[in-house]
Image (cartoon, rainbow, N blue to C red; front, side, top):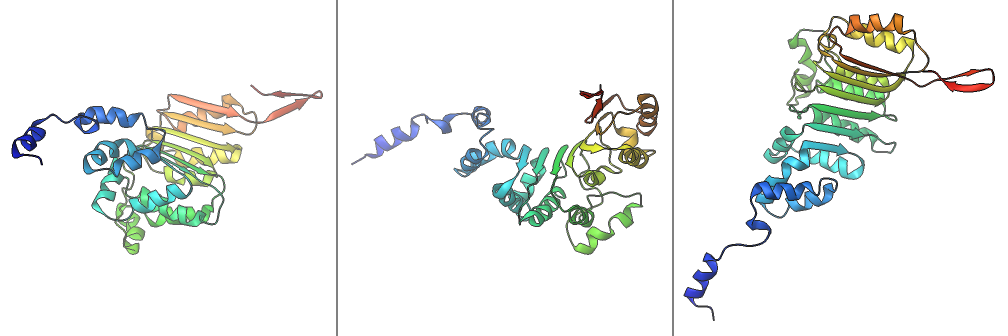
Length: 271
């Protein structure tokens, strides 16, 4: 039978093991699991202290794909205080699309979650096989697509749907990468982006539309890094002045050519 003296001695003994480590050390341990997101999620379920240590690492950078990503988005828009805190933690998000029966559900969850990530800085969307009209309609409803209108009219659709959104959705976003359908780049309109990457292959008409939509806008004045892919060789003497006019503060412009010219029976890639 344990006496009162021995129980007091046990209470005075220093704790050993994982819980004896400082939060800074626990954070370093959690970083070793950065590539194993399920393990980080399991670690967060142990107790409140480990949850607080791991939540920054878990939710600062999100890669959303598959059933696990769908469940995570559903939890982020649940409306609880914990979910709202997690949304405020997100700085980088990568949404990976795939062709399946739940594509529409993922699109709706993505738009709802993005409207709550007001501290998001970098966004990447892979939209090779999405229903573009459906996604753009959802983005428009939650106020993610900005238009050249007064703020009051921009808030009309989100207010009508009763969601906790505003015309200032994603106010801190600075980096945007779009893969797949070019129409998804509408989310860049009238935003103070500093870096824009479009991985869709553009023709002259697409390039012209991008330059025209950015000229004399907030996007055109703030962008400093632009990466584009073109389908055929272009005349740099003609294109670069137009790019410079649309983006006067541009410091880096990467133009990647994807076409192959066939000449004299030999195939060679244009420089």
